[in-house]
Amino acid sequence: MYVGALELDVLLGDVGSLKAKRSLVRPVLAELRRKYEVAVAEAGYPDLHRRTLIGVSCVAADAGHVTELLDRCERLVAARPELELLSARRRLIGPHDE
Image (cartoon, rainbow, N blue to C red; front, side):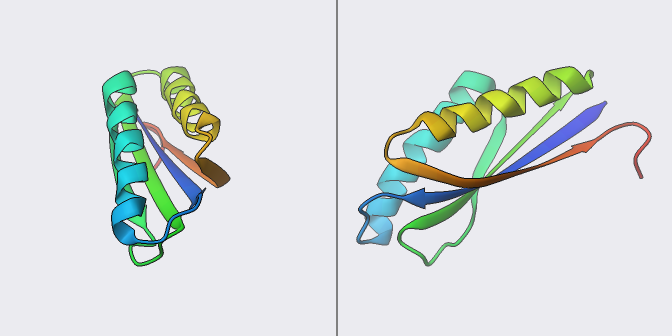
């Protein structure tokens, strides 16, 4: 079993309130869940209007599948015109990790 985690640090466009921030972030989270069946959450910068941290995780029997799934999630967020992906960090935990 392999577990993958992806942290996406995202800068939002012209956002002036937390309500506007949520209206941009929620559809992205829902699309990631629907398209790729991953666990996803807004995981950072809760009080900043123009910044968010999106956390994505998945489990699979094959490391290659986990890597491909996280790649797709990263590309989906990077392709959104209203978002600017600042950085992406990954972790892969496999059967030999402790």
